[in-house]
Length: 140
Image (cartoon, rainbow, N blue to C red):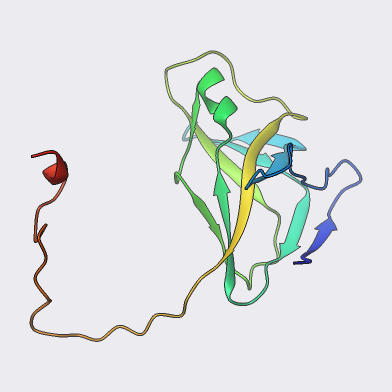
């Protein structure tokens, strides 16, 4: 599948797969800014045209375990209608050492199709073996 991507600055790095068979395209930081709440946002200087019926998902890279940060929203969502800069926002976590620097690969992008769901409100749901068992209920 071909997806259009636009460099918003000459320093932008077009994402690529690090290895054959990788699911995520590596995103490189071209800017870093902090805000008064302590968040650190990395810009990529890239804009992308996610095809209709698809979503771009932003995940941290496994290198996140080497820095003192967590991706704020766990998984970022890029809707097909968004045309702004791809950015990743992190919060210091109190573990690890350091933070990402401009020029580091700071996240990964996975583009996947999704179904259009039509919800039907009902009074009852079908019963299952698990039922209403919540967190940790499969380990009982």
